[in-house]
Length: 287
Image (cartoon, rainbow, N blue to C red; front, top):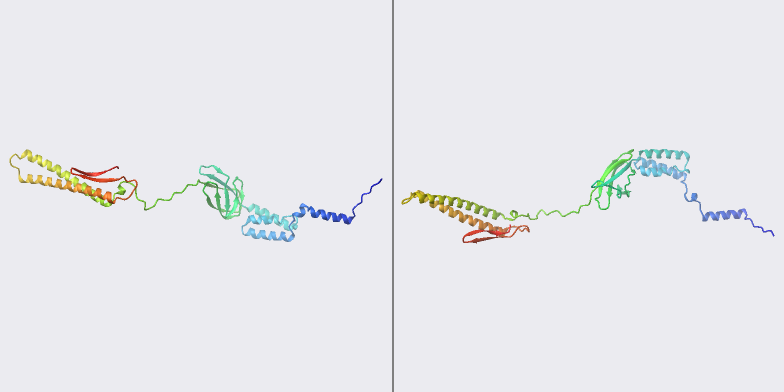
């Protein structure tokens, strides 16, 4: 028994092809080629960008007008301009190191505020010519800002930066902070009183030595009668010695009192106290 399979008519085959084409569009139709007007606009825009020094954007426009769908003459013109752009486009090789000279790769770089690179791997990076501001950032390291003047035609120009470690900043010492140390805490009146005390003690000591010498002379030379002049000199030296020791003692005591009552507060200055007894005078404390 013979079985016959019906054959679709031409009209039905066309309808089926249209239906399948709508369901499964081809790759060529999804990526439409630029039109003639788009090719012309891309070429003109590339020329304006080239004049403005924006070589990266100009190159993107020229890749449009070299498409096969563009007119041949226009396509050849764009190809020539593209070659010129590639020749004029400067490239930089950015190298980052830490403070000990170790290469850094995980470095984020921006140029004129826009991202340029997520890491540095030693490969050249195309940039527009002109004065460009770069910022280099790496985790745990100080950010580095650099400015380079990039010239047309420079190829593989190497620029190195060093990213130092972040140092924790401490608040600056106050200009009004009290000076530390024993002498820094002594008020001015204490200096004056101590000075008077030292001078008085020195004069008393010298006059006392002279008085002792005069007394020894009088004792050895004068058995029954001594000249009034020698006796007077002895008494004068003795009086000066006494006054000197009294003034010296008062000066030391006054200086100690001023120090205790007027000294500047400082945690590093040890405590001190003055003392006076019938036979001595001084300052007590740990220094």
